[in-house]
Image (cartoon, rainbow, N blue to C red; front, side, top):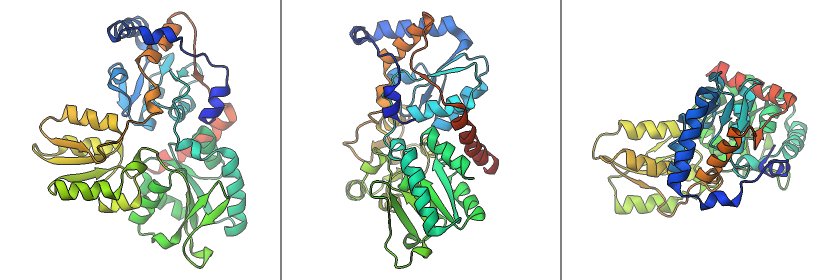
Length: 369
């Protein structure tokens, strides 16, 4: 289910009165409810969340990590997932039937995940099969809808994370001659390039025009098919940003996420997953200088937590992830107060068939990393 479909479901909206409450009052009420529920309540918080929300997280991490930790918390009846829609879907897939996964604001989607819907994907698969035959294995970034994960699992493929993408792409090439990488073209391109696949052996599938975009003369030379999707945050880091840092602060390290474009990754000093970025800064020597190309809430937190280092955003005009920021303190409090009254609002529930095949894709990844 993408975010538009989610909004059409019968979900409740937060009363406007919550926005009139003071931060102190809301924080006090959240703490009280957390204490009241104890282990029956688990709040996972993604790294990109606002500080006003992340302060109440029982666990902070990346999307798959948080879904796995949620599944391990068997005592938790209610998992209030402070992230975006696809993350809550993955948590629902992995948790037990008696556990309810809740998203505080159903508008918290992911533009990248929504760039590949299931109808487009099935249509593209049919056309790609007619062009290349049974030579393609689908892979999907975990930043995708449950429906896309299910499609990939049904067709023998696997999910990938930004941390294990190289291992999974390498594995995929032991299974088939070609891969279809959904939905983020930049992570797919950067990963394949690092593994030695030339850019002229990659093509982009355009789901709007239903066409394959490539520069070579022979379509048979293509071994990596990239879905035309991207992260709206990471695509806003540019070559000009890097050139400006190099000119103004030539001794500053540039560290970016692999969801950035190939050109930006190529010109950076380091590139890696969110965990890689956090660990890199944590282990960096005192006095070191860093320009970081990733989501702004995380960059600000890294600045606050590492006062002994000089840290800036690679793009000084970058905004936080707007959809991730839909989860705020008023929505968190509203969700918890509804739970306190016995009402489960904004529950995320993936149907049994979709969950079955999505689990195959997730399991295949976990078996190979």
